[in-house]
Amino acid sequence: MTEAIKARTRLVLLTPPVEDAVSFAPLLEAACRAGDVAAVILNLATDDEVIALSAIRIVSTHLQSTGAALLLAGMPALVEPAGADGAHFSNLDQMQTTRTNLSAGRLSGVGGLPSRHDAMVASESGVDFVMFGEPDAEGKRPGFSALVERVSWWAEIFQLPCIAYAASVDEVPRLVEVRADFVALGDAVWSNQENAAQAVAKATTLIGAREFAA
Image (cartoon, rainbow, N blue to C red; front, side, top):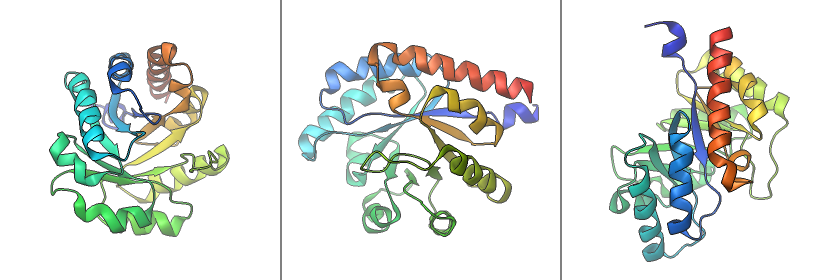
C-alpha cells in the first residue's frame, strides 16, 4: 500500500437544513454515489424529536448502501434511536454540554474552533475529528488563506483527523495539498441540488488528480 493511498483525502457532505426528507434523501444518495463520500453531516430544520427521528430514518435508509456514515448536527440524544453513526457539534460549548447524551461507541466531532487553543482543547476532549473553516450561524467563515494555514499547522502536529470546509469545489485541491484528512462541501454542492452529484464527482476527480500529482 502506497503512502498516497494511506493518506487519501475523502469528502464529507454537510446538508442544508432539511425540511422534506422524502424529497431530499434521494438527491443525497445520488450525491454520495457520485464520488468518494466518507460521511454526511445531517442538518434538520426541525427541533421536534418525533419529526426529526422520522427524517433521520428516511435519510439513513437511503445512505445504507452508499458506505457513507451518518452524523447528526447536534441532536446527540437521537443518534442511537435513529440508528445514526454519531454527532457533529457546532462549537465547544455545545459539545461540552450535550455530548453526554451521545451513546458510547458513537462518533463525535466538533467545529466552530476559531483559535488554535480551541482546536487543542477539542483534541484533548476525545472527539474523533475537528472541523475548520465552516460558516458560522451568520454565514461568515475564515479567509481561505487562514484556513489553509490552520489545516497545514494541524497536519504537522496532530494525528486526530481534521475536516476542512471548502466554500467551492475549486478550493478542494489546495486543501488536499496541505493534507486535510477530509474536505467538507456544503453550499458548493447544494446551491443547485440538481447538480449536486456532478459537484461531488468533480471534487472527487480533483482530489485524485492532486494526490496523483503529489
